Length: 171
Image (cartoon, rainbow, N blue to C red; front, side, top):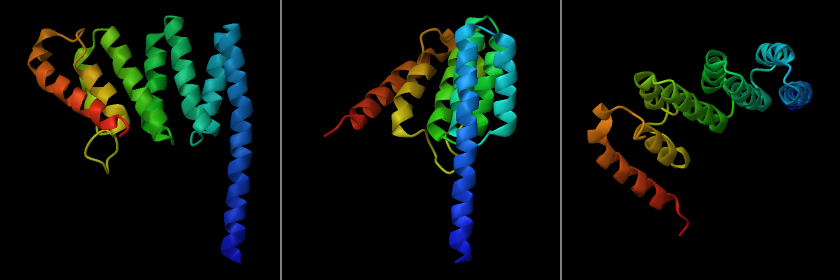
C-alpha cells in the first residue's frame, strides 16, 4: 500500500512539473515570436534551472538555439544545443541536438569539433547510433563541406548510409 501511495505521489509531482514547464515553454515561444531576447534568455535560464528533466526543457533548448542562431549568437546556440545533447531526458531530442550542434560547428568551419560531436556514442550502453539516426549521422559525417582529408571515408560511409536506409524501409 505504501509503494502505491508513493507511486501516485510521484505521478502527481511529475504532472505538476510538466504543467509548470509547459507554461514556461509558452513564455519561451512568445519571446521568440516577439523577438524579446532578454525575456527569452531569462525564460531559458529558468527552464534549465527549474525543469531540466522535462521534455519541455529539451524542446526549449532546440527552440532557443534556433532563435540564437537566427540572431547571430552562435556561441549561445552552441551552448543550448550542447546542454540539450548532454542532459535531455528524451534521447530523440538529445540526438537531434547533437546533429544540429555538429551542423552548426561545420558551418563555422570547426570540422574537427563537428566530427568529435558526431563520434560520441549515442548511448553508453549501445555500441552505435540507433537506425533512425544512423543514416543522418553518416550523411553529416561525409558532408561535402568537410575538408578533403575526409575524402577516403566517403565511399565506405555512403555504402553504410545506403545499407542503413534500405534496412529502415518497411517490408
